[in-house]
Length: 365
Image (tube, rainbow, N blue to C red):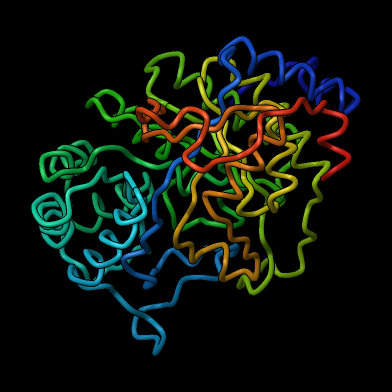
């Protein structure tokens, strides 16, 4: 049980939005004084939509034997990689459902296939997938991580985190790795030398105190391992979900408040990513003045959020334009947030940056 300091509760509830945004912006400026906002060109590849986790918030998955269930072939995955590499992509994010019919060797052979025929950074397989495989294949989770690394896994995404408080997970994802287990596998991955991102999906029935507990638990792991490269948060997208379609969508103000609050609390995690994928481009742009130093991914493909009828698309040109208009210099990055040579200032000709205040950015949202 994490003790929640009253001053954090008061800060979230009572701080004016612009004041909280200024606090978060100060943290960002301290960590990233160069005023560069990064983005990555990658692709989110879901290798299967078959899943037995039955998460109440997921509109993407299909149960085993469902007529709409599928698993991609290696060749299909390879073709997707070639498409993103042709656009200058440097990474794939690969995740799937908890499919009980895929043998563990399939994943290892997939990684070997990618590295041999379509070499690219593989950011893949969330802690909940690792936990599912450890149980299904009767392996120690650390051995699962080690085998994946030997086959070619480069880093692990923060998927499946939702809210890292067991009461909430029991309500919305009780078949998936519990809060303690998710954190344990992340820490284990860090100990094995993998860097990972971390996330929070809010608006799923948690209290404010539970939202803060989630952040403090991430902060505690980071204090021990320094293995988290970035934090990303977004609200529940309730449309078409099995049990949560009645839940209200949270608004842009709550997203900006939550993002800014996270930047203030998670002062030991170096990067904060804007979630334009769920919030839209203008709100994503505003988030750059509420603590975010990264504009996320071009995301050539995205399936899970889209299944909930939330579909935003963009181009490299638009991403770089929005970053410039917010008053920052765009640059492409890799998964570890190192900047790709000759991309500072953008890869697309555009006008010079102009200053935009947090208040103006919020008004645009």
